[in-house]
Image (tube, rainbow, N blue to C red):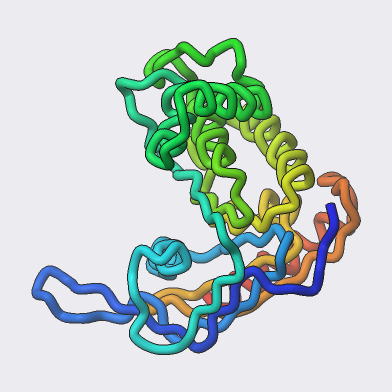
Length: 248
């Protein structure tokens, strides 16, 4: 995968608010400044109340910010949801093709692309299965295939491994890295597991809470593929753990 010095996303002193039950505006994120390089794999870690969901919605353009500037240098963003967000009445291939239908592609074009993406995530044999017939890992793969169907250049993933068992999560991580290299896209992943973030990421953004702020940005300099049993890997885990403890 070819990396450039270009940036996919820049936030400069961004603040955004939400309304509580009494319609009072409260800051969800405050004075957030960050920069994400094109083609990078970046993770966001932070406690509940750190504004991670707000940040994702803002980046996708689903909500406004009240202060600061946001520069988006990508054309096709997509998202993989923590809880899959699949339509239960549609088969796997129909779920993957749904966005393509909204884009006006013909049925043959939609099916061709959807089958190709299901093949990329290893689910060709399950294309006619409904979500209720799939395991959690398989549903997450359908969600990933649906995001890949538009050939995104910026992919946001909301805790994609949190509902999966260890074996399933490990297989999905390996496939995700292959897809990332193949597409050359930028990935921004919200994650609460420090080892996973270090294994996958070029950079980890640590956020503090109430309101959400960027407390620290940590560059991960380990060579790929990463040996998760090595001393340098454990050293990175310890360093990041201490950084998070310092802001808790």
